[in-house]
Amino acid sequence: MSDRPLPDGPQPDDHRPAGPAPDLRLDPPSLTRLRSALDDALARLGTALRDLQADARLPRPWLGDPVSAAGASGYARHCTDGPDAAVGALAAYRAELERVRDGLGETDRSYAATEDTVAASWGGSR
Image 1 (cartoon, rainbow, N blue to C red):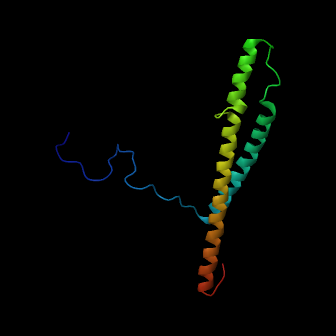
Image 2: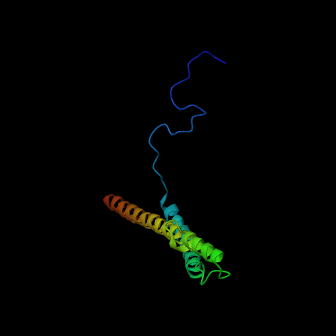
Image 3: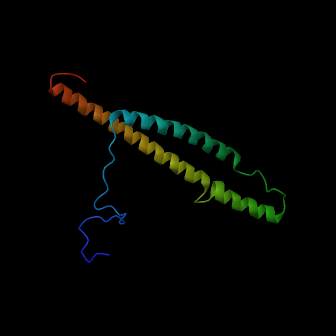
């Protein structure tokens, strides 16, 4: 082990970022592919959410006894009715994916407009 001081800056075992998190940078074709992947994920998630909403609610307690009634009530709170229910969590996840997809669409449109403006300023078109 050396007695020399460690150099300034991040150390090999320091996993924290040295400064602010870097911006996410994507090339324009990646935006289109990423939006397409999000659309596919949203379609699959929409199907799963519709199925869960249709099938998760129990029509009646399994055996009709008090224990089954309590179990059915807990199940409903966990899957469909409670504040942390699976249906609500999946719906929130879907909304977040939609927000991300829509934001990428806006970024893509903004990039295209900027490219068109730059190309026009040089007397050409994209």
